[in-house]
Image (cartoon, rainbow, N blue to C red; front, side, top):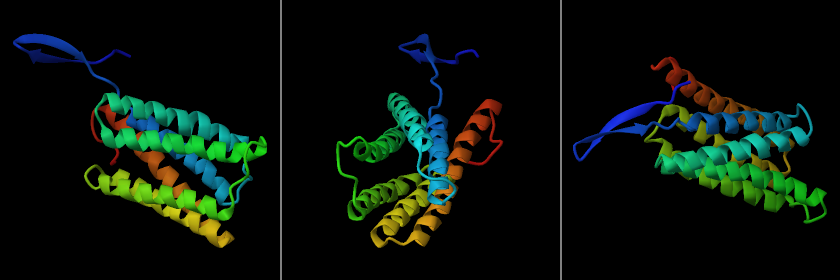
Length: 198
């Protein structure tokens, strides 16, 4: 594939400027697929296992951090904070599970885990406000993600398995919405027009 360049004029001189790729689809799809797979677990389809941890570290975590760094270079503060934060969320989530298994720390109790999830819910709810100036697709992603964090926190603090199960299905919806928006952006950019709404 050819690299794209734009011609700009500075002080009467025409210069070529490299047009960077849009990193948002990478971040959205990484977040979406990893969220779907984790919430298949929350919905009771399979136990927590290394597949979820590997996806969290390699794709949900690393790919989103890369997307956030690329958005930083593009001057996009919202996307830098979102992808960087949720990329590091996946790392913290994996570490939270791995440290007790390695004998390096106590496993979190229900109260501390609920506090962890609640604070991510608060962060996501505030980020949702930012999406009101961006797109309907991002509004859906951030609204459903905030609800997911609050449901998971409530499930942990109450010990109610039904709330956890509902959170799992709601989380699958969250992940699918992020995957859809990311893939729609890829398709729209490839076709040079809005084929799918975002």
